[in-house]
Image (cartoon, rainbow, N blue to C red; front, side, top):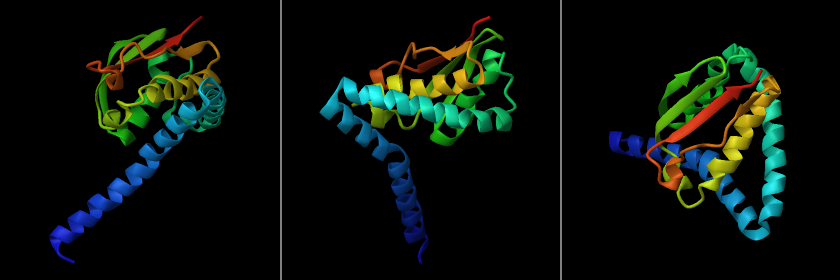
Length: 161
């Protein structure tokens, strides 16, 4: 196989895997919401919350999360961002509140036609994950969101005492 063909095959594999991992779920969620409206969102929220609860224990252990520290809880974003082509920095960090500014998001282009995928579904998953680790903690709704046309996404984690 020539070098050009090898590169093309590598790009094709990546496109198929990324398509399956990111675009397919987006298409399914959008189709459900288009067809069933708020009823779909209710089901999706329950599923997102269950998924968050299921993944919380392994993330807590693997990332050695201090559940009483907002920045430590925010490690779930660092972990996922590193796998999803999302780049950012923590602009606020305290045990009570941590805010991450995500300034580059490779998949954001896919979400432009359906920003609620991030605004709702991804927020629900993250919030459920954090709340499963500490019921007094929460992920706030995104203050800014690239798929809505903002210059960045702002993600906030808070711990209430």
